Length: 324
Ligand SMILES: *[C@@H]1O[C@H](CO)[C@@H](O)[C@H](O)[C@H]1NC(C)=O
Ligand SMILES: *[C@@H]1O[C@H](CO)[C@@H](O)[C@H](O)[C@H]1NC(C)=O
Ligand SMILES: *[C@@H]1O[C@H](CO)[C@@H](O)[C@H](O)[C@H]1NC(C)=O
Ligand SMILES: *[C@@H]1O[C@H](CO)[C@@H](O)[C@H](O)[C@H]1NC(C)=O
Ligand SMILES: *[C@@H]1O[C@H](CO)[C@@H](O)[C@H](O)[C@H]1NC(C)=O
Image (cartoon, rainbow, N blue to C red; front, side, top):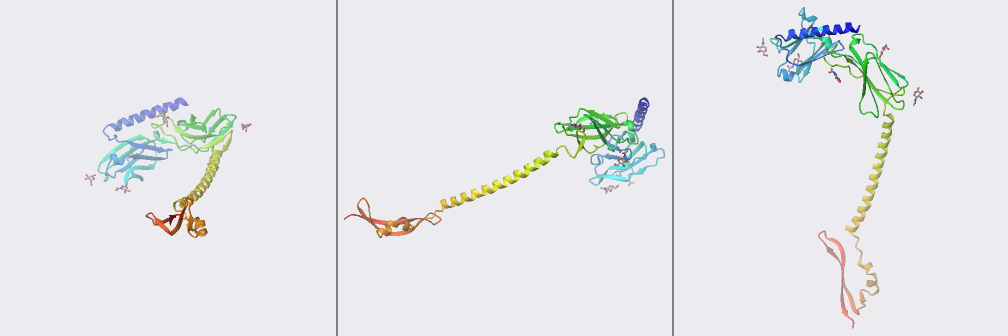
């Protein structure tokens, strides 16, 4: 079985060699195109239109069956890059494909190529993926694709919260196993299908990853960082509330300080009538100084000072005479 498969591969490779040699004889095959055959159902061929054909809106045509009947079909669905044709999508209808790129009015061929469409297959994602846990061993399986199962490998990647990168394991389609899983740890798993290179594909294409799943000791979980997430959410909420409280507190302190500052900048000026209440009332403005001088109040007035014309004090004038 395996021998027959390898013989087939060699014949395929030889075939493509012959094909590539026959086309390099005289044809323009120097430009680079990207060829993808999605699950052997749809072809996508793209080219760098801006670099290869600046200012030219090229047209694309193709034929299967080796172009025996020379039934060339125009591109049914163009891909555009800034308004110019830069790729084509069409149905995969055979394994031998010839493509041609012409200038706008179809008077000149700019590029042509013959190729084996099944050397460019990108498989679909694995279907109906199942996980089987037994002690510390996991076996992952998927449905067998309808065709070319021998060309496929099932790749399994997994990591725990504590692993930096993915651990990888691959096996022939459609089952892959790994052991040594810690029952106390949650693991993320993902799987994809890979085409064998160079036996089946000339390019290294794999399917997209099937959606990640999370497991711990045989139990499927929504996510591995569920508890961490909800915990961190609570912490965020709490610290937000704390911050708001702190702000209010700081604002209150500032308000108090401001009131005090206002008082010190614009002090309430005491009326000397009250300060010198004794003086004015008891002695009717006259008082005997201890040194023995007799003093008499002459005037009492507001004394404006400073540029803001703020009242900052009182001026009280006395005239003192030596005691008789
Ligand atoms: C190029 O041709 C495609 C159809 O073949 C058309 O949709 C597109 O508008 C054209 N672009 C320019 C710049 O003429
Ligand atoms: C087609 O376009 C090319 C320029 O791209 C021009 O040189 C040629 O004369 C055109 N041929 C016809 C038949 O219009
Ligand atoms: C695979 O899953 C699809 C739905 O996703 C279902 O219709 C189909 O029967 C499943 N096949 C097998 C073999 O379980
Ligand atoms: C294919 O690609 C994978 C990574 O995507 C790489 O590890 C591998 O070496 C490649 N194989 C070939 C033959 O280029
Ligand atoms: C893991 O699962 C097995 C079977 O369900 C159970 O016997 C075992 O106690 C579990 N281990 C832990 C650490 O939860």
